[in-house]
Image (cartoon, rainbow, N blue to C red; front, top):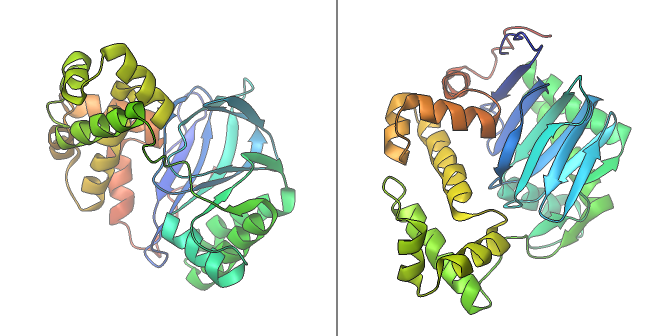
Length: 289
């Protein structure tokens, strides 16, 4: 667990070895704000104190104690404190495969599934989410896995749907151009083109590309690129790369540049993130605020 700073903030972001496809974040944030970003998998969070304010493409949600937050893959969002004292929460980040496998095994939903609500008041389910954390931190993989499955099945039973997730498929010239631009940015992450050059490559104007990209992915190209760089850096850190090496490989100017964006988006610094990945499953948190 990261030590509390002057603002009283602390966080632990880790992955239990015995639960593949699941990341865990337990934290208190006061001044920290998450910029617009998205996740490859799902976000299931239980707010235990304070208020978290979540900015979605077409809505703003305020989640207080006893709330469960559900965000589907690739949905762009922001997060910040909704009250001066910030918020405390426990978050599960299950992969799409984990959630869809649980849906197929324990519910009547088939295929790709998603959640219809972003935030609901549900103290019993919020307690289940914190119980997953508690069991994982105690090294009790059997309990953590069992409660995880019960939690996901419960939420899917109440708020789930069998429908395509918001990973939009191109259905217009603008969407096709946005998809081509995204592929170009991902391929040339270290040295991306300018917006004008990118628009020329996909055969449109800068303004039209900006509008189509934002509509398709919930954020402008430069914001999406920063998010994509952090995602790739996370994979490199998980594989054992040093932060400085990851920074250069994904196109950040230096490690300080990576540190700033990584911490804002992931919620912990890259060094702390890498150290947690090197810990064994049975190792408990350094501290328990």
